Length: 242
Image (cartoon, rainbow, N blue to C red):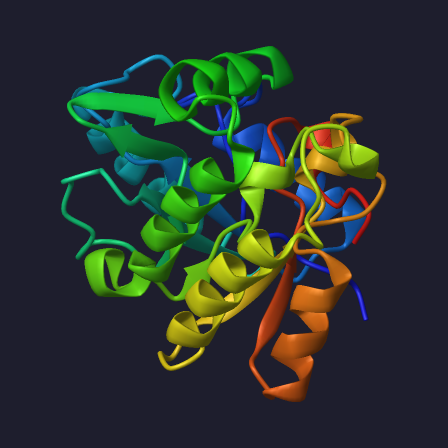
C-alpha cells in the first residue's frame, strides 16, 4: 500500500511550499491522492493561520490543481479547523478538527508553541499544575466534533508534544488519564476518524506519533477508524514516518 497524506500545510498558512509543489512531490512518491488542510483563520492569533483573503486564494488554488492534475492524482481540499475558529467549512471536502489553545478568561493560551511557552503558561495561569492544564485541554478536545463537525480528530494529545520521556508531566497520572479518557469516550460516540500523526517526530520532539499507545489501543478495541497523517509543513516530510 502506498500511503497518502491528508494533513498538509502550505505557504497559505505556516507551511513552506506551494500546493503545486506538494502535489508534484506526491506524484513523484506515487501517492494516489493528497489532501490539503490549511489552518483556519483565528482572529485572536493570525501568526500561523490562513488570512481571510488567503483562505479564498487557497480554495481557488487547490480547486484549480484538482482540474490541472485530474487523471494523475486525486486532490482533496480540506481545512484544519481550530476549535476557536469561527470560519465556515461548507466548501471543504473534509475537516480536521484540532485544539491548539486553551482559553483562560479572555486569554487564548497556545498548547504547542514551545516547551518554554508551555511551562510559562502552566506556571502563570495554573500555579504549576500541569494536570489542571491537561484537564482544560481535554475538555476542549471532547467538544471538537460538536463545534467543528470534523471528519478527522487531529493530534488528539497535542499537549504531549514537548513531553518526551515525561519531562513535563506523567501521562500515567490518574488525573491525566481520567481527563484524556473522558474526551476519548465522548469523541468515539461520533462518526470521526482519529489520526496517527507523525508531525512531532518529523520536528524531533517525539520518537513516537500521536496519540500515545494506550489511546491507540482504546481506539482499536472500540473499532474506531484511524488514518495516518504526517502533518507535513514541507514537501520533504510529506510521507514522514507513514
